[in-house]
Image 1: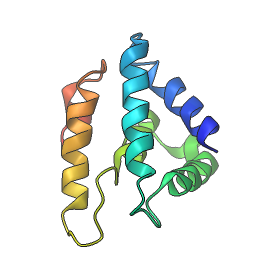
Image 2: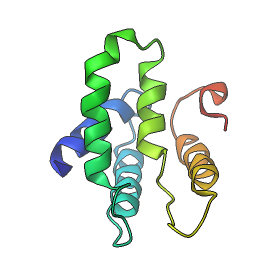
Image 3: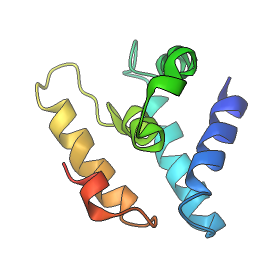
Length: 109
């Protein structure tokens, strides 16, 4: 599963940068955050499941790549005792995606 997710990340992010170090570092961030010990639900298996579901409706999505990035980062920051995980995740995504050739409107939180 992790190999497939890494491949999916590489395919998506390669459209927006040729810098393999940025792609690898971003993957490392995603893998590290979603694999942390305090994750019971918002983990790599959850991402994998979301991409399976997305695959079933992808032809109906107008901004598919933007949705994929949103899935990758939707709960990258997670603490079960906090109620601002989504906001922190959005801020994390905004900073991370500045390394890619994505227009600012698409990544605005």
